[in-house]
Image (tube, rainbow, N blue to C red; front, side):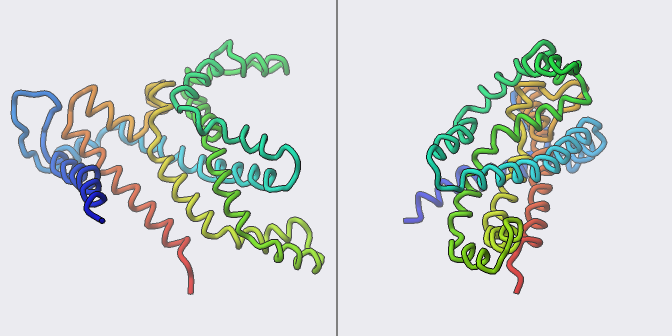
Length: 276
């Protein structure tokens, strides 16, 4: 019974990890008549002295720091709004979830037009007397623009997860709290929030991992520019491996990225663990 799962696990997880670990210490190129040579830690020495890597790491961490609380909080707000029994609530749930089922490529192309200097967003701002910036062409606003778009696109997915968590909380608890005179805020603080412990741990980890793997929208909307202001670690690894064909160096980037995500996940698990 476990053989198919074991084959898939070995083929698509263990072998790629093993190859990455091995290639990271070589000068392998994607297409080269010369066989790969072992070069020790040269790739890592080069990586840690590469300004583009540190910019990419800073952008990735900044994106994660902003997107995790913003996206989870907005998704929880939507879940609370649609967690009611009233006519038409399924319509709003569908509308909020709609961006999730739309391809990130399509969403990125759509927002690419919205963010143009003469796009819809700047035209709306102009109605209020505000001159909108060149969202994706300005290093100061490009990453912010991608954060806003990313938060909007994935919000519906996490709304559904929050909603499933809300519906596991017994209505008797709310009824008892109401009889005790608890306000809406007190019910949320002492009934809803503790009841969402497992849900918020899951959401925290999934959003963090997704944030660190930021790639598609950046690749389509800015290609890491302007001036590397939106470059990410994953984008740098892909660009190095496939465009520049430096497979060994790209493997070193991927290995460092893997270690970073592993450390963050372990820290998150430590602080969100069940305490005796």
